[in-house]
Length: 528
Image (cartoon, rainbow, N blue to C red; front, side, top):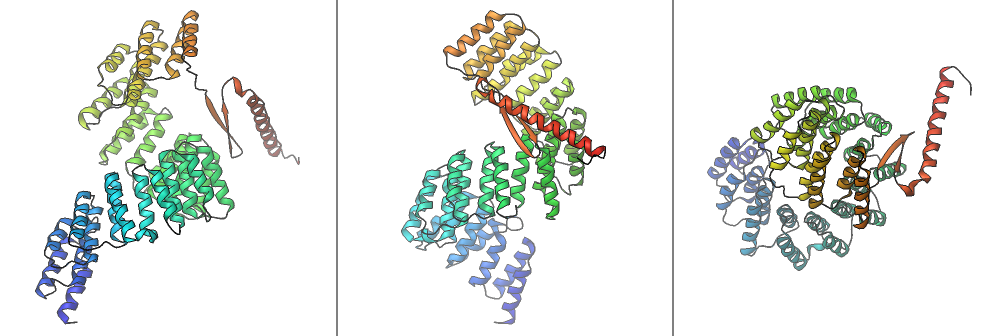
């Protein structure tokens, strides 16, 4: 190898930006290495870097290559995939096939990932056919990516067939399959697959715990987390985030604090995701001081982190603090999203800040150009109704554009129905209820209207509503509440068929009283 060649290759390895790469490429051409596969692959590899590289410049280099190797094709496919230029990714793959070059076990996963992001079932099935024809299904990397592709396009049945065809499934195969079922909302099949898995590593446990939490099965997620601990497997960051989310939704502060201490015991670094999960948990459990302390200590904050803290202040009724934080977020250059404005409308509602709520609506629509959804309309109507501005609330609902999903529009009308009921406007409440019934078949509107009739002393109207629900086979959705005692979350469901749970409630209350008695004994120095 000549001195010039060594120098060129050395320069390629030392490149830190595109300017240096272009200079190195000039040296490559000068030294006569313009068709050297190794030098070209290094050039294109830098161009494929998602942050530092440039696929467009890489393409210019690629077009000058007379006989590109499979490695060079793979590098270009990867470059455009990482930049999100999916059509170009597929185009390069097609050109590779046209010149008679066969893909390898690196090419196919890149192409399958492009198909998954494009949500293209037809294209994915064509690639699947090529995989079978070339015999690559025995490659576990290709097989797992094929399973992931089908789950990404919501075809879990096809993913299961591929899973069954793979000669030797690994833990990654099981993890991808379980996550696919969970993503579709089929927790039952996900759990069956989890139980079938012969070897459960941290990823398999994490996929099932995350699946439960994603589908609002928070108690089941916590229970499975305890089972995992008994196997001796230490959780990773993703599992901690899932379990903290479950604690936040259940209001399970004791378990959340224990997890926080567990994280500290493992000396796990406070990443953005983990820190945000802790902030969200403490805020939803009412510990705003700890949540704010963690928020202030975060070395960096993204939009989700800001939203978690703003939402915490909002749901705990501290509207002025939420507004202050919102302004700080804007000053920091963070652009709010639709979730941010839901929290801000909630904060304005709890704090009785009607003017600020209208300003937020104007900011959302005219400055950030975010189209309001049913939840936003519902919140702003609640803000106006609490300030007695029912006429303005009614005008907003009647003039809002037709939302794509009827249930979204029903949210706004339910908020208006509730507002009319709170102010004793029975006639207006009736018209709002009629509109809700047109939009969705749900017991909520009937129950609200029935309660409004009762509050107004119109018991005949309440009876008429109940008869109508019975004739149309509409059942009232039972209420549900949870109670945490000694680290265990107990759930209670209201309804005629749940009377035995009253016994359980009394048992739990007795347990609480006993705990307080024991604490009192300790404080008074008793030996009992």
